[in-house]
Length: 122
Ligand SMILES: [Zn+2]
Image 1 (cartoon, rainbow, N blue to C red):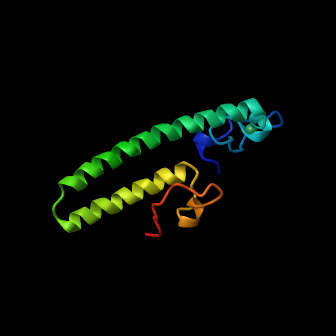
Image 2: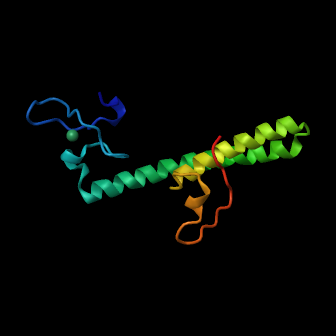
Image 3: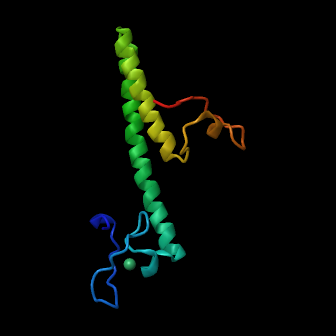
């Protein structure tokens, strides 16, 4: 069963009912109903990027808040807690920006990589 919000919006000619396939990511139709067309895919990608940008900005604000909290915190346990929350949020951002694996080797790839945060496994 396809998630209602991700279901293709086209109507299947053969049955006259709504297509049961999943729409392409960020798009409204499946690959059979126009989702394979390059302009449709470009638009879908654009939409996905916009969504990701908004989410990333929100998370970055949260990290800034946490940094301030970290500065103010005096209890070492509290600082640790804030730090691990910051790491969690960084991980989400890295995942979103295409760093799917949070292992160090992923960041020191072809270009030598610039990211030195070793997030490791929780
Ligand atoms: Zn379809």
